[in-house]
Length: 201
Image 1: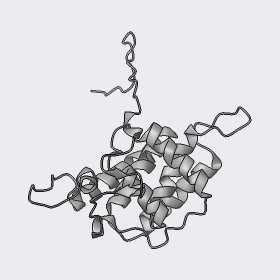
Image 2: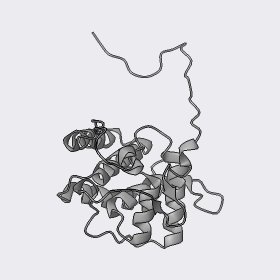
Image 3: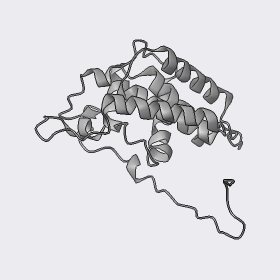
Image 4: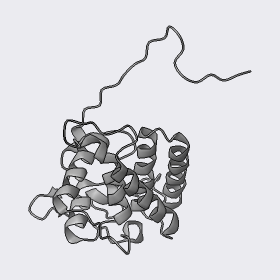
C-alpha cells in the first residue's frame, strides 16, 4: 500500500480567499491608551522576555505589525495574539523580543522591498535573520508562556511559507505541546474573573 500526496490528475484545486477582517482592532481596545481596558495580564503565562529591546525604528516595527494583522493574523491559529495587548506592550517597551522578531520575519514578505521588486519566496535575508534569532531565543529561553507559543506558531507559518516544511512541522509540534502544557486548550471557568483580552488569548 502506498500513500500519495498532492493533487490528483483531473481533480480541480480549490482556492480559498481569506479577507483580513480580523485586522481590525480587537474588542476591548482602548484607543486613548493603546491598550486593553479591563485586562488582567500579569500572570506567568504572559511574562515578557528579559531582553525585549528590538533594534528597529518604531515606524518600521509598526509597519511590520500592521502588515501582520492585515495579512497573517486572519489565517488559522493566530488568534492567540491580541492586537491591543501587543500594542500596549510595544508602547511600554515590554513586548516579547522573540515574538516581535517572528512577527517582523513573517510580515516582511508583505511589505514592498522597493524599486518595484518583490520579496523572494524564502523572504529577505533580513527576514531570515530575524527568524533565526527568534528560533534561537525560542530554544534557549527557559520560559513557557503564551508569547512563546505564539512565537513558535508564527515561525512555523514563516517556515512553511518559505518552503522549509520539516522545520515548520517541528515548530508547530512544539507550539502544540507548549499550549497543552499551559492549558490553553481549556475554556476558563465562568467564575474566573478574566477580561476580554485574557479570554481571547
